[in-house]
Picture 1 (cartoon, helix red, strand yellow):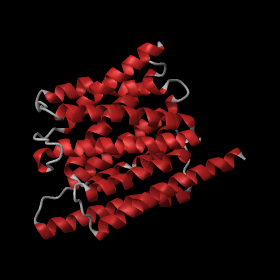
Picture 2: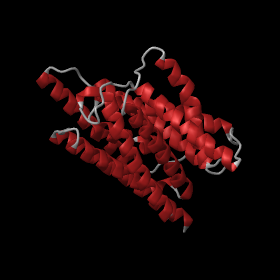
Picture 3: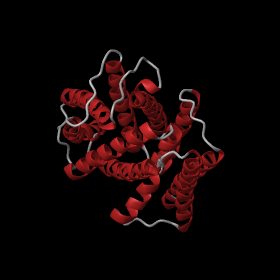
Picture 4: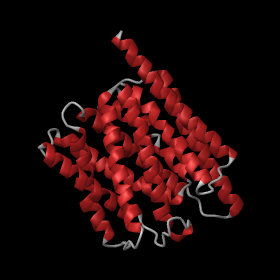
Length: 303
C-alpha cells in the first residue's frame, strides 16, 4: 500500500511536468519560455505523446515477452478509447483555461468513476457520498459563475465551452479509471498503457491532416519530454491502482491540483479570483472526502 501511495504521488508530479509543457506548447510565442515560436493543437500533442509511449511500451513488452494484445481485450479497448478522448479534451482545456481550473475540473474523474460504477457495475452509493458529489459539482458551479461575471465585466467571450469540455474529459477519465481497475486481475500495467497509443495514434494522425505544426529546434525536445513523462505518469498510475484499492490510493492524487495551482501562479501569472479559489477548494474537499469515505466503508466491510 505504501508503494501504491508513493507511485500515485510520483505520477502526479510527472503529470504536472507534462501539463506545464503542454501549456507552453499550446500557447506558442505567447509565453516566451524555451524559445517556443509555434502553437501546437491538442491532437498533435496527443499524437506526439502517443508515438513516444507506443515505442517505449512496445520495447518493454517485446523484451518481457508479454502478449501484445493482452487478455481482456474488451476493457483494454475501452481503456484506450476513453483515455484518448479524455486526454485530447483535457489538453484543449489547458490551452484555453488557467492551469488550476483545467486541472481541478479534470480531478472530478473519481466522482464520475463512482457514478459509472453505479451504472455499469451496479454498485450502491451511500447518501453521504452523494452529498460529497453534489459538493464537488457546486464547486464547478462557482467557477462557472465567476467566468460568467468576468465575461460580463470585460466583454470577453465566455470560456464556458471549455469548462464543459473539461467536464466531458473527466467523465471519460472516470471510465478509463474504471477500466484500469477491472483490468488489474487480467493484464499487466504495461499492456494497459500500450492500448492508449494503439488507439490514439491512428485517430490523431487523421486529425493532423487538417491541422499540423512542424516542430523546430528545442520544440522537438519538449514534445519528446511530454511523451516520456506521460509514459512515466501512466505506468506509475496504473501500478498504483494495481497495488491497492482506488479509495485508498486516489486521495493522494489530488496533490496534483496544488502543483498546477502553484505553476499557474508563479510561472504563467494566472491570478484566480476569490470565487474561483472557493470553488477550487470546495471541489478538492468534496472529492477528497468522497475518497476517504469510500476507504472507510471498505475497511468496515473487511472487519
